Image (tube, rainbow, N blue to C red):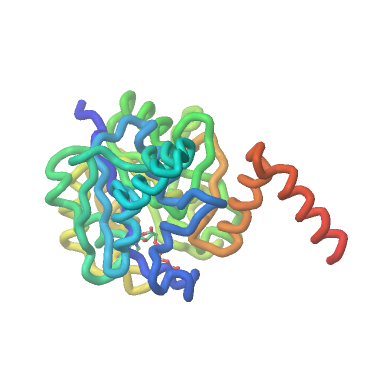
Length: 291
Ligand code: UTP
Protein backbone atom coordinates (compact mmCIF):
# COMPACT_ATOMS: atom_id res chain seq x y z
CA UNK A 1 0.00 0.00 0.00
CA UNK A 2 1.32 3.42 -0.96
CA UNK A 3 1.42 6.05 1.78
CA UNK A 4 -0.54 9.30 1.31
CA UNK A 5 2.31 11.81 0.96
CA UNK A 6 0.83 14.48 -1.29
CA UNK A 7 -2.10 16.82 -0.83
CA UNK A 8 -3.78 19.13 -3.33
CA UNK A 9 -5.24 22.42 -2.14
CA UNK A 10 -7.47 23.85 -4.90
CA UNK A 11 -7.46 27.61 -4.33
CA UNK A 12 -8.23 28.93 -7.81
CA UNK A 13 -11.94 29.69 -7.38
CA UNK A 14 -13.24 33.23 -7.76
CA UNK A 15 -14.83 33.38 -4.31
CA UNK A 16 -17.70 35.47 -5.68
CA UNK A 17 -19.70 35.15 -2.46
CA UNK A 18 -17.09 37.31 -0.73
CA UNK A 19 -16.81 40.11 -3.29
CA UNK A 20 -15.49 42.76 -3.03
CA UNK A 21 -13.08 41.34 -0.41
CA UNK A 22 -11.98 38.65 -2.87
CA UNK A 23 -11.47 41.02 -5.78
CA UNK A 24 -7.75 41.26 -5.07
CA UNK A 25 -7.31 38.65 -2.34
CA UNK A 26 -7.86 34.88 -2.41
CA UNK A 27 -10.90 33.66 -0.46
CA UNK A 28 -8.58 31.18 1.26
CA UNK A 29 -6.74 34.10 2.92
CA UNK A 30 -9.91 35.19 4.77
CA UNK A 31 -9.12 34.78 8.44
CA UNK A 32 -10.70 33.28 11.51
CA UNK A 33 -9.68 36.12 13.83
CA UNK A 34 -5.97 36.13 12.92
CA UNK A 35 -5.39 32.86 11.07
CA UNK A 36 -6.23 32.43 7.36
CA UNK A 37 -8.49 29.47 6.59
CA UNK A 38 -5.82 27.98 4.29
CA UNK A 39 -3.46 27.76 7.27
CA UNK A 40 -5.98 25.59 9.13
CA UNK A 41 -6.12 23.21 6.14
CA UNK A 42 -2.33 23.06 5.81
CA UNK A 43 -1.95 22.37 9.55
CA UNK A 44 -4.56 19.60 9.28
CA UNK A 45 -2.60 18.03 6.41
CA UNK A 46 0.71 18.37 8.27
CA UNK A 47 -0.79 16.65 11.32
CA UNK A 48 -1.81 13.79 9.01
CA UNK A 49 1.79 13.32 7.81
CA UNK A 50 1.52 15.04 4.40
CA UNK A 51 4.96 15.81 2.94
CA UNK A 52 4.14 17.65 -0.32
CA UNK A 53 1.70 20.56 -0.46
CA UNK A 54 0.38 21.26 -3.97
CA UNK A 55 -1.59 24.48 -4.43
CA UNK A 56 -3.68 24.92 -7.56
CA UNK A 57 -3.80 28.69 -7.81
CA UNK A 58 -5.08 31.27 -10.27
CA UNK A 59 -4.51 34.91 -11.10
CA UNK A 60 -4.51 37.27 -8.13
CA UNK A 61 -3.43 34.59 -5.64
CA UNK A 62 0.13 35.78 -5.01
CA UNK A 63 -0.77 36.78 -1.42
CA UNK A 64 -1.17 33.08 -0.74
CA UNK A 65 2.25 32.21 -2.14
CA UNK A 66 3.87 35.00 -0.11
CA UNK A 67 2.07 33.81 3.01
CA UNK A 68 3.81 30.42 3.05
CA UNK A 69 7.18 31.94 2.16
CA UNK A 70 9.88 33.54 4.31
CA UNK A 71 9.43 37.33 4.65
CA UNK A 72 12.90 38.85 5.03
CA UNK A 73 11.73 42.42 5.70
CA UNK A 74 9.15 41.41 8.32
CA UNK A 75 11.53 39.00 10.05
CA UNK A 76 14.33 41.61 10.13
CA UNK A 77 12.00 44.22 11.65
CA UNK A 78 10.61 41.82 14.27
CA UNK A 79 14.14 40.73 15.14
CA UNK A 80 15.35 44.33 15.48
CA UNK A 81 12.43 45.01 17.82
CA UNK A 82 13.17 41.84 19.82
CA UNK A 83 9.62 40.63 19.19
CA UNK A 84 10.22 36.91 19.70
CA UNK A 85 6.55 35.87 20.00
CA UNK A 86 5.54 37.35 16.65
CA UNK A 87 8.69 35.97 15.04
CA UNK A 88 7.70 32.50 16.17
CA UNK A 89 4.18 32.98 14.80
CA UNK A 90 5.40 34.00 11.33
CA UNK A 91 8.11 31.35 11.18
CA UNK A 92 5.66 28.57 12.06
CA UNK A 93 3.72 29.28 8.86
CA UNK A 94 6.66 28.81 6.49
CA UNK A 95 6.72 25.47 4.70
CA UNK A 96 10.09 23.75 4.22
CA UNK A 97 12.02 24.34 0.97
CA UNK A 98 10.81 21.97 -1.74
CA UNK A 99 7.75 20.94 0.25
CA UNK A 100 5.42 23.35 -1.51
CA UNK A 101 4.49 23.41 -5.20
CA UNK A 102 2.26 25.86 -7.06
CA UNK A 103 0.52 25.13 -10.31
CA UNK A 104 -2.03 27.30 -12.10
CA UNK A 105 -5.56 26.73 -13.26
CA UNK A 106 -5.78 29.36 -16.01
CA UNK A 107 -9.58 29.48 -15.91
CA UNK A 108 -11.84 28.56 -12.99
CA UNK A 109 -13.55 25.68 -14.79
CA UNK A 110 -14.56 23.86 -11.63
CA UNK A 111 -13.14 21.82 -8.76
CA UNK A 112 -12.69 18.70 -10.93
CA UNK A 113 -10.65 20.70 -13.42
CA UNK A 114 -8.56 22.26 -10.63
CA UNK A 115 -7.65 18.79 -9.31
CA UNK A 116 -6.85 17.63 -12.86
CA UNK A 117 -4.40 20.55 -13.23
CA UNK A 118 -2.18 18.83 -10.62
CA UNK A 119 -2.03 15.46 -12.44
CA UNK A 120 1.67 15.69 -13.42
CA UNK A 121 2.65 16.52 -9.86
CA UNK A 122 0.76 13.54 -8.43
CA UNK A 123 1.69 10.98 -11.11
CA UNK A 124 0.53 7.52 -9.99
CA UNK A 125 0.33 7.96 -6.21
CA UNK A 126 -2.84 8.08 -4.10
CA UNK A 127 -3.31 11.62 -2.77
CA UNK A 128 -5.44 13.84 -0.56
CA UNK A 129 -7.51 16.88 -1.55
CA UNK A 130 -8.42 19.52 1.05
CA UNK A 131 -10.84 22.39 0.44
CA UNK A 132 -9.83 25.14 2.83
CA UNK A 133 -13.30 26.69 2.89
CA UNK A 134 -14.52 23.60 4.72
CA UNK A 135 -12.94 24.38 8.08
CA UNK A 136 -12.93 21.36 10.39
CA UNK A 137 -12.12 21.77 14.08
CA UNK A 138 -11.33 18.43 15.68
CA UNK A 139 -9.09 16.85 18.29
CA UNK A 140 -7.55 14.50 15.73
CA UNK A 141 -6.97 15.99 12.25
CA UNK A 142 -9.90 15.04 9.99
CA UNK A 143 -7.50 13.93 7.25
CA UNK A 144 -5.64 11.79 9.80
CA UNK A 145 -8.94 10.11 10.72
CA UNK A 146 -9.50 9.34 7.02
CA UNK A 147 -5.95 8.05 6.51
CA UNK A 148 -6.44 5.63 9.41
CA UNK A 149 -9.51 4.18 7.64
CA UNK A 150 -7.63 4.19 4.32
CA UNK A 151 -4.82 2.12 5.84
CA UNK A 152 -7.37 -0.62 6.61
CA UNK A 153 -9.58 -0.40 3.51
CA UNK A 154 -7.58 1.30 0.72
CA UNK A 155 -9.72 2.47 -2.23
CA UNK A 156 -11.01 6.06 -2.22
CA UNK A 157 -12.37 8.07 0.72
CA UNK A 158 -14.56 11.13 1.16
CA UNK A 159 -15.42 12.85 4.42
CA UNK A 160 -19.19 12.81 5.02
CA UNK A 161 -21.59 14.58 7.35
CA UNK A 162 -25.35 14.27 7.80
CA UNK A 163 -27.32 17.31 6.57
CA UNK A 164 -31.01 18.20 6.65
CA UNK A 165 -33.27 17.31 3.69
CA UNK A 166 -33.49 20.97 2.66
CA UNK A 167 -29.68 21.18 2.47
CA UNK A 168 -29.02 18.29 0.05
CA UNK A 169 -29.19 20.67 -2.93
CA UNK A 170 -26.04 22.42 -1.67
CA UNK A 171 -23.80 19.33 -1.52
CA UNK A 172 -22.56 16.21 -3.28
CA UNK A 173 -24.71 13.45 -1.76
CA UNK A 174 -23.70 9.79 -1.47
CA UNK A 175 -25.82 6.71 -2.13
CA UNK A 176 -24.83 4.40 0.74
CA UNK A 177 -24.59 0.61 0.32
CA UNK A 178 -23.73 -0.42 3.89
CA UNK A 179 -22.33 1.07 7.08
CA UNK A 180 -19.89 -0.27 9.69
CA UNK A 181 -19.27 2.16 12.54
CA UNK A 182 -18.28 5.48 11.03
CA UNK A 183 -17.38 4.00 7.63
CA UNK A 184 -19.96 3.88 4.84
CA UNK A 185 -19.48 1.86 1.65
CA UNK A 186 -20.67 4.05 -1.23
CA UNK A 187 -22.47 2.81 -4.34
CA UNK A 188 -23.28 6.15 -5.97
CA UNK A 189 -22.91 9.92 -5.75
CA UNK A 190 -25.00 12.85 -7.02
CA UNK A 191 -24.03 16.52 -7.17
CA UNK A 192 -26.51 18.90 -5.54
CA UNK A 193 -29.72 16.82 -5.80
CA UNK A 194 -33.10 18.19 -4.74
CA UNK A 195 -34.46 16.73 -1.50
CA UNK A 196 -36.79 14.48 -3.55
CA UNK A 197 -33.94 13.09 -5.65
CA UNK A 198 -31.29 12.80 -2.91
CA UNK A 199 -30.32 9.14 -2.28
CA UNK A 200 -29.46 9.96 1.38
CA UNK A 201 -28.70 12.88 3.68
CA UNK A 202 -24.96 12.10 3.78
CA UNK A 203 -23.15 15.09 2.30
CA UNK A 204 -19.60 15.04 0.97
CA UNK A 205 -17.38 17.55 2.80
CA UNK A 206 -14.16 18.92 1.28
CA UNK A 207 -11.71 16.17 2.23
CA UNK A 208 -10.84 13.37 -0.18
CA UNK A 209 -8.33 10.56 -0.56
CA UNK A 210 -8.22 9.53 -4.20
CA UNK A 211 -6.40 7.04 -6.39
CA UNK A 212 -4.65 8.55 -9.42
CA UNK A 213 -7.19 6.73 -11.68
CA UNK A 214 -9.42 9.75 -11.04
CA UNK A 215 -7.36 11.69 -13.61
CA UNK A 216 -8.54 9.40 -16.44
CA UNK A 217 -12.13 10.17 -15.46
CA UNK A 218 -11.45 13.91 -15.19
CA UNK A 219 -9.70 13.89 -18.58
CA UNK A 220 -12.88 12.73 -20.36
CA UNK A 221 -15.36 14.75 -18.36
CA UNK A 222 -17.77 17.27 -19.79
CA UNK A 223 -19.09 20.19 -17.74
CA UNK A 224 -21.75 19.24 -15.19
CA UNK A 225 -23.86 21.10 -12.61
CA UNK A 226 -23.30 24.89 -12.73
CA UNK A 227 -21.38 24.63 -16.04
CA UNK A 228 -18.27 23.43 -14.16
CA UNK A 229 -16.16 20.27 -14.34
CA UNK A 230 -17.29 18.56 -11.17
CA UNK A 231 -15.13 16.29 -9.04
CA UNK A 232 -18.31 14.47 -7.95
CA UNK A 233 -19.03 13.46 -11.57
CA UNK A 234 -15.53 11.97 -11.95
CA UNK A 235 -15.89 10.14 -8.62
CA UNK A 236 -19.29 8.74 -9.73
CA UNK A 237 -17.54 7.26 -12.79
CA UNK A 238 -14.61 5.88 -10.80
CA UNK A 239 -17.08 4.30 -8.36
CA UNK A 240 -17.98 1.77 -11.06
CA UNK A 241 -14.49 0.24 -11.00
CA UNK A 242 -13.01 1.22 -7.65
CA UNK A 243 -14.12 1.09 -3.99
CA UNK A 244 -15.31 4.29 -2.34
CA UNK A 245 -15.95 4.88 1.36
CA UNK A 246 -17.49 7.74 3.28
CA UNK A 247 -15.85 8.53 6.62
CA UNK A 248 -18.12 10.15 9.19
CA UNK A 249 -15.45 12.23 10.88
CA UNK A 250 -15.32 13.36 14.47
CA UNK A 251 -15.21 17.17 14.45
CA UNK A 252 -17.08 20.40 13.81
CA UNK A 253 -17.27 21.68 10.25
CA UNK A 254 -17.85 25.29 9.20
CA UNK A 255 -18.68 26.28 5.63
CA UNK A 256 -16.29 29.22 5.38
CA UNK A 257 -17.16 29.59 1.70
CA UNK A 258 -20.36 31.28 2.92
CA UNK A 259 -20.67 34.48 4.93
CA UNK A 260 -22.75 32.82 7.66
CA UNK A 261 -20.23 29.98 7.99
CA UNK A 262 -17.25 32.32 8.24
CA UNK A 263 -19.05 34.38 10.86
CA UNK A 264 -20.01 31.25 12.85
CA UNK A 265 -16.40 30.01 12.74
CA UNK A 266 -15.14 33.41 13.95
CA UNK A 267 -17.67 33.54 16.78
CA UNK A 268 -16.96 29.95 17.83
CA UNK A 269 -13.18 30.41 17.82
CA UNK A 270 -13.45 33.72 19.68
CA UNK A 271 -15.48 32.05 22.42
CA UNK A 272 -13.05 29.14 22.64
CA UNK A 273 -9.81 31.15 22.68
CA UNK A 274 -8.68 32.09 26.19
CA UNK A 275 -7.31 35.45 24.95
CA UNK A 276 -10.61 36.36 23.23
CA UNK A 277 -13.38 34.75 25.27
CA UNK A 278 -14.09 37.57 27.75
CA UNK A 279 -14.12 40.29 25.08
CA UNK A 280 -16.23 38.18 22.69
CA UNK A 281 -18.81 37.37 25.39
CA UNK A 282 -19.03 41.03 26.43
CA UNK A 283 -19.59 42.18 22.83
CA UNK A 284 -22.17 39.48 22.12
CA UNK A 285 -24.06 40.24 25.34
CA UNK A 286 -24.16 43.95 24.58
CA UNK A 287 -25.35 43.33 21.03
CA UNK A 288 -28.11 40.94 22.14
CA UNK A 289 -29.31 43.40 24.81
CA UNK A 290 -29.49 46.19 22.24
CA UNK A 291 -31.20 44.18 19.49
P1 UTP B 1 -16.30 26.86 -4.45
O1 UTP B 1 -17.27 26.70 -5.53
O2 UTP B 1 -16.77 26.83 -3.05
O3 UTP B 1 -15.43 28.18 -4.61
O4 UTP B 1 -15.16 25.79 -4.68
P2 UTP B 1 -15.62 29.46 -5.49
O5 UTP B 1 -16.14 29.14 -6.83
O6 UTP B 1 -14.31 30.17 -5.40
O7 UTP B 1 -16.67 30.29 -4.60
P3 UTP B 1 -17.96 31.16 -5.00
O8 UTP B 1 -19.09 30.19 -5.12
O9 UTP B 1 -17.65 31.91 -6.28
O10 UTP B 1 -18.10 32.09 -3.82
C1 UTP B 1 -14.57 24.98 -3.64
C2 UTP B 1 -13.05 25.03 -3.71
O11 UTP B 1 -12.57 24.72 -4.99
C3 UTP B 1 -11.72 25.72 -5.50
C4 UTP B 1 -12.07 26.98 -4.70
O12 UTP B 1 -10.94 27.85 -4.63
C5 UTP B 1 -12.49 26.42 -3.37
O13 UTP B 1 -11.38 26.23 -2.52
N1 UTP B 1 -11.96 25.89 -6.95
C6 UTP B 1 -13.24 26.01 -7.41
C7 UTP B 1 -10.89 25.94 -7.80
O14 UTP B 1 -9.73 25.84 -7.38
N2 UTP B 1 -11.13 26.11 -9.14
C8 UTP B 1 -12.38 26.21 -9.65
O15 UTP B 1 -12.53 26.36 -10.88
C9 UTP B 1 -13.47 26.17 -8.76
